[in-house]
Amino acid sequence: MAAYQYRFVAQAADYRTLIGLAHSQGSDPRFFLPQPALVPSKKTVAEELANLLIVLCNIEDETCINTSNPQQTTLEQNTCRKACMLAEHYLETKDPTADEKDMFWYLDSSTLDVTIDRNLPIAENLELIFLHTIKRLINKQEQAAVFMRNHGLATLQRVNEMKPDQEVAAVTAAILGNLAAFSESEVHQSVVHAGWLGVLKKWSEDENVTLALLAQRALANLDRDWSADVFGDGVFLLYPLYRSKKTVHADIVFIHGLLGGAIKTWRQQDLPVPAPADSPSQVHTACWPKDWLAEDCPHARILSLHYDTSLSTWSGQGSDRDKRTLEGRSKDMLEKLRQAGVGSRPIIWVGHSMGGLLIKQMLELAEGDTRYSTIQTSTCGLLFYGVPHHGLSWAALSSQAHYLLYPSVEVQELSRDSKKLQRLHSHFQNFVRRKNIPCLSFGETLKTKISKTLPKILLVSTQSSDPGVGEFQTMPLNHINICKPSSRESVLYEQTLAFIQRCMFLSLMDRIRQGVMGDTEETHATKDDENTKIS
Picture 1 (cartoon, rainbow, N blue to C red):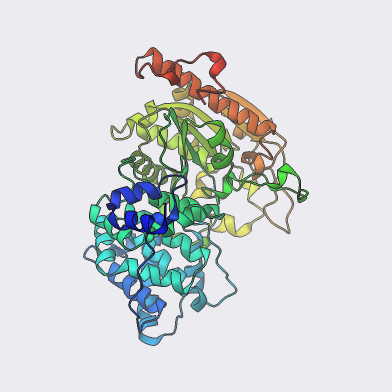
Picture 2: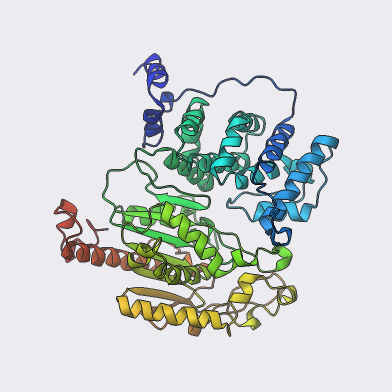
């Protein structure tokens, strides 16, 4: 096609067609019009963001503050309020002073793997602080509408033109993904007409995995003709990344552990010595479920969830205690998974450390709630890496005195003598045995270094990582690397893959016997097909 033909399609096609093109693999970027030129502004980027942030903070339901009970204002709401106060102060004085410890913690605990340079004064990170706060505020239809009415898309464009770096791009992609999560066609049309499709398409192919996945999430949320599933803040769709006609036989859901991340936890094991430039192992994956598992299990949908954690209340934790407990986090995750369509097909859960406990908690909560009951009944496999089923010994953290003086909710719940963990595990064992759910657990045998100045410790003993049901295997790895295969040929990955493929095969056969699936080519499978067609 000639250039004018691409331009004609870009101008003539309706917004839904253009979204479908942007969400299709290999589509030509010339199908998407560039962003329009912005009207010159006398305000700085920081001033525009500050004004937008204040408007969002002042909407009717007063998102930042719990006015009915100020004592119950959560840490996130309190930090949001501080960011709003910083914005007001900046507009009045142009002097961006604030409690830098609070602000930097707020950025670090976000759902993004962005790099914050703590050596720079807060003024150098001002736009990023405002962007992060805006992202967190856009979690309801009302906030999205206020954002759109106050020219939020133009402000985002100006920020990215003035500061074209990956940190700003990542937060912008997250904001667009949050906006796209609302099914209002006007919002979707505005995103298209503002020229963001071409930008998102470009970002979705970026080498930075976090930026690429955030852009893919935004495109998936925009593309309602492809799927009605919504991927909320912190929900990463690792596969499929584009529109696909492949039959999906199962959902594989990854949940990281304490201080982990939806992407960084699942990276390939770091090489102690860099491989030669001509070595095949030189290609290092930043997310093995996305790069390896997706290729080996093309008929699965792969999701990864993010949540922020801390070891100490000094890291930032206030009166939002209930939200940070296993039960509080699990309730939030269940709703996000329901919106993402999890529960409509068989589920294979994969958890590292505290992530495994969250999986167990979700299964317990789902049992007694009709909104989420299919999430429990659809479970067909459980895979655990270094999960402290019976808790951690306080001795494992005794070397860090301040953690013991002010332990976070997360650390308190991981105590070895926790009655809550005992009750949760008893329910889990009964569930697995009653439903005959396949379960594979890996336990670490090497100690982990948690401080440069202190000796290594065994974070999760084999007695704690063995759930007492299913298969249990120990690996000569530490707590960090227990979920990070060194290669696709490693024993850890091969056994992981074999287990997932077996769960998918058994689940598919069970559905065929029950008459749930039609008589399609994919369902004509024998045991010999387990590692090919079914996976």
